[in-house]
Length: 162
Length: 249
Image (cartoon, rainbow over all chains, first blue to last red; front, side, top):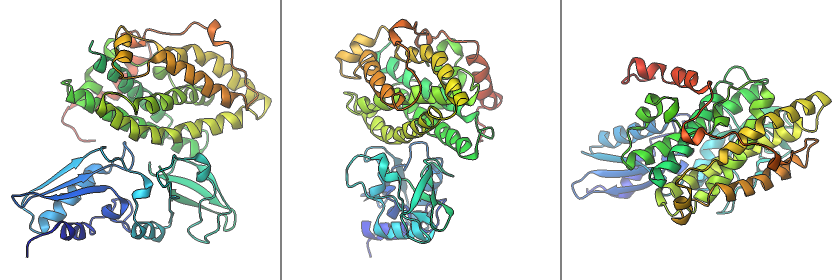
């Protein structure tokens, strides 16, 4: 059976974020394009969530290893800012994956500008209240902010909207 | 110098050097959140400098690591504001506030640059810089309306730092061509927007913005003239690379 782009995207579901094992790079929106080449090779275009993300080399390597394990003879990867990442690119399945990892999801921007007020009132991933406050826009990684839940009185992290 | 190279070196060197300075707060922040914030902003800025050094490489300059780690003081084009030691937290916070307001406005304008590869980088970077400005504004407002000691220290830091901050907008011979070719709106227009932007925040505090026209900008950085603080920073930053350029760390 000839390989299709849909098949490749399916295989890539196994490649997860190096720091969040419950979300695939496809659902995170980091894989922007998959293309079958005439010679049977595959081209994959990735974009970083944050420009300084130190995990890009790992992501690139994991994509190449996974596709080669499925018998793709030649895998070309490119990291590009042509189609820059926004948090709206996270799919519904991806948002579910973030929640399973205990992270609050970024609010939808719907193409609008990031209004910093929306950083307040993130939904607590434990008790689902929005009675929360932003502690600091910088967390354990570049893509996470730290909030405090006034109801369960716990700190929680949010995947940042951008 | 070619206007594109001239502009890119100034942008990239500012990011690299201030990024390195911010990283010096790692482990020393006054509270844990600030330790993390300055370390995260350091990582962002190094990422931004890498994107800009990659554009320089595409234009025929050396590899990013070579450019970052093998030049000495006179070959750097950062403004002197970025190279000053971190000092006390009040100084680092005010520097961050003054620099990142200019930086956000700069990259918002660069998103419309006629040089498309730079516009692409700017569209990415400007979203991230919003978080830097949010962070700076939060703390300037908090400390600028706090105790008498906090306000006195923040005011002193503001007055010390402003002449250096005006050096951000120092122009080079390439400026007329940078503007006429649509690469960038130019430093004078940027400074006008910056003054408006910082004034709005300071107006919500007990801090007073001095009359900027009475200050003498600290310039020279764009032409490779630097304080005695830059070379030790470069030596430390490049220590591993100079021992073994192929090392992974």
